Length: 137
Image 1: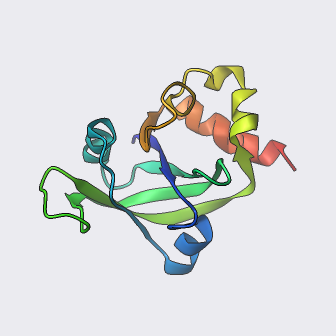
Image 2: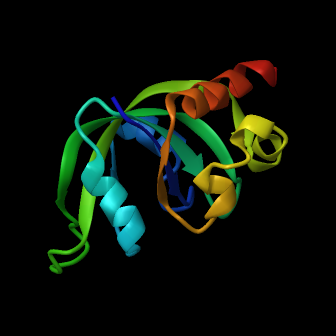
């Protein structure tokens, strides 16, 4: 199993929207690096959902339910989309400010490549982010 962090603007699709709809399809990703990460995802992989641009926080866990397929927002076959379903909501969202205080997370792409929309995480990084949600009560 692989672990990921997926960033999306909440005014386009929020965590609450995902819970309401029962799924989320990431679209309009136009970075080759992020696209390659989408192509590497397999069914069952887990991904953290991150509200970008406005709130800058991790809000929940999703599971890949449909691997890379044509992005519905373009006819260009280079760009792909992946579909997820929600697995669990964070007890309290983990802010970027909080993430920056966790030394073991200082090397993650969220910090090193902040414009990247889809990034891999190690199991340890994934677990640390999940644990940070429970610690913030």
